[in-house]
Length: 103
Image 1 (cartoon, rainbow, N blue to C red):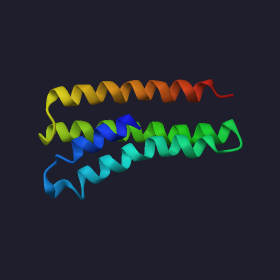
Image 2: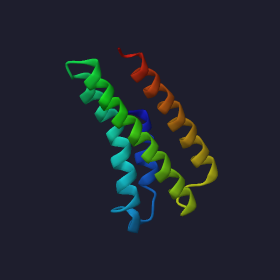
Image 3: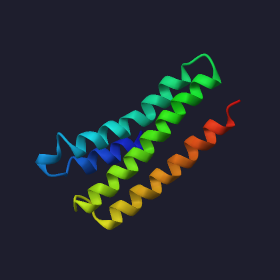
């Protein structure tokens, strides 16, 4: 959830023409991560929960791609890029580790 808030603050600074395109896509990806984890936790089996964790993991990879694109378009600087990528990679490891721990 903290990661969502951080990303929202960053995309809020994007150029106005990106509000309905790249910023929208980034915000959708970042919202999808905790939403899928929450939804999956309500499922009746670990198999179902794992599927939602896979979706959350896919959203993390999608977010990472969009963040790199934001850097290429010069909407974020290299320091922000590196910080976000580090956080995303840590979240990817956490979600994957959690998924793998479910039987």
